[in-house]
Image (cartoon, rainbow, N blue to C red; front, side, top):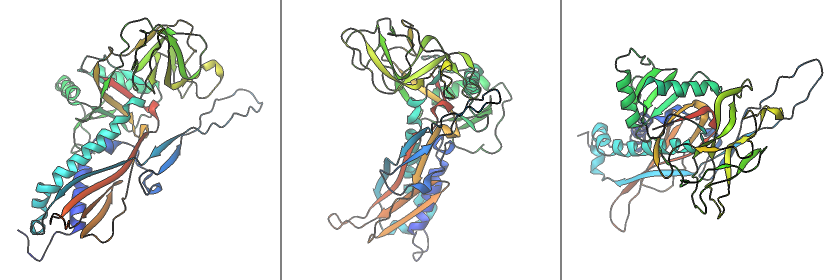
Length: 400
């Protein structure tokens, strides 16, 4: 035990807990965390402006283009905490003993929760590769992620791939006979597997699960041609189905191909659209589906074109994955695909024990107070943060 006169202080405990929490982050350690100083409380929201895009014009004539100023919002919506109690005598433990008994279990739980919330924005990613129902088990799966990223002009630097447990071990076995590269900078990072196919690969048991909507049956098609925008009017679905398509479902439309946002050239891949609100079919099998990205055809001349052509009338629709089936979603992304903001939580006054620490963009607070009703000293460790997809086009889902 420590010297009886050397009690563990709130500052020592909070610093140690924060270090453990940071070391246990996986996905949350690889995303954009640059806006922390613009928030101060739960419910606060900022608008994050996206870069403008332009089209290169030809000839000497001035051709002014409209400034669109695309943006997204990030709200501090999560206050997560772990609650327990310890006595004054337990403050006489060494920090190592106290850490093993209290801090590590609490920090690991908080880290897992933050990772789950970061990965929970997967349902905004509309690029999807792999075969739903088949666990990725070869270099070909990594190639598919990297190839899609290249076609969608995702920056080459800072690409990360988060694998669930099954996919991680299947791919690890497939690569075991190869001399793949282990990063010098990150070998001790939790869950690190390898650097290969221009991807830093990590395992995270918090890889999200996605359940496809109950669309089974019917022959869905586009109802009318030349549709544009963020919704699509369709027909041919099974009649009167609630939860026909779930948020995060991905589908393609025959004859509609994606566009490289950098050079505005059509790709050979069919464009993929993600459902942004639960879609239901009416009694005739019609459904209007909210989608991302919006349908913007190349012939519009827009710098924000997403498809080569608008869907034709009666163009068939193909949903990725079987109806009412759950698939694990492994996620490839570059840093700016997802934003995480963790802000310092306000400390209460007049309590027995309180401290707050911020390190590497992660902040937490520890507070203890005497409960006169039960004659105990409950303690809580809190972290306050928000998560949002900044650039969904910079992410790729690799389905199990």
